[in-house]
Amino acid sequence: MLSWKNILVLLCLVHLWGCGYQMVGKETHIPSGLTSIAIPTFANSTLEPGIEIPFTQAFLREFILDRRVNVVDRKEADSILEGVINYFTISSTSYNRSGLVLEYQTTVLMDVTLKKRTGEIIWVEKGVSETQWYRQSSDALGDEANKAVAIQQMGRFVAQRIRNRFFSQF
Image 1 (cartoon, rainbow, N blue to C red):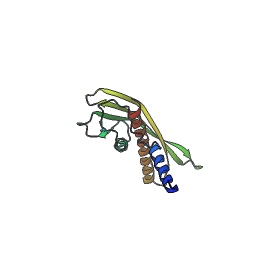
Image 2: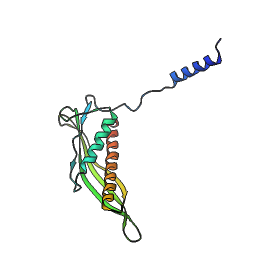
Image 3: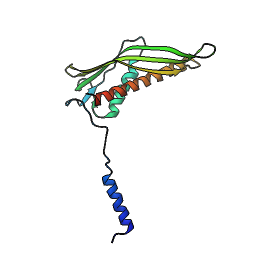
Image 4: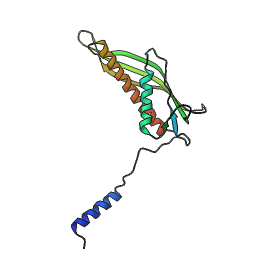
């Protein structure tokens, strides 16, 4: 005869076996043969110096952390993800009663192209845009730091969208 403890253990085991736990989120729809990707430094066609660096870093971070493809050097990659930052602007969006700026809006517009190693274009995303806002600081260094954070956030958000496109919309 089974004791209540044995029945409880048996129920727990049945529950664990039947809970349907499985790894999700690793399915991809990329063409077979694309197992690695290179992400060279993006091109900067704007007047904002260095904006290509946080964007390239954001894309590298997204694909490295995802692990569904290997991020490798251009010479070893099956595919190459290239980006061109075409437009960057900063505009003031809110003011205090004295007319001094309280908040800025930054907007970026870029193109992203995925190519096979052979140069054949797999897909192109033109006009990818992102906007972020940041508060005005009491000093110039604070303003630059706030702007840098806004640029990093834009890079991260665009990189997440493109990574999702890469893995789910072929």
